Image (cartoon, rainbow, N blue to C red; front, top):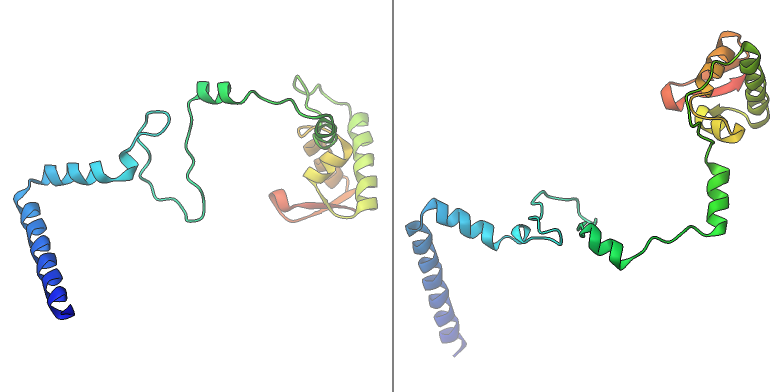
Length: 169
């Protein structure tokens, strides 16, 4: 009994496959291309009304969908930072100047250099980002000071670019 059922399913499957192949052979290339793009899930519009991207993305990462700006603004008003978060952000962020730096005197550069030398003697080898953060100076103040320290041999450096560390000589 099961062999007759198996045989009838096999015959129906073979007939179905033959009919599909015949339909594809008789269709034009444009029809096949249109049907392939209509059935793809990437052609469905997203929340913005744009067609979704068909690019392949790495596994394990969720697909990002962009919502309309008006919808997100109405759905969630921005929340102000809490007091503890504001304090930590103020501690870690270096002050940023509103205008370009004024020309500094050699005495100003020497004063900051003395602070840098004292810091690296105390803490050991440090990168310029760490020195900047610990001293609370801006990003554009430090390169001239470090260059002066290397020229006067008050500082030694090891490494290249962002991996460069500075030590007291």
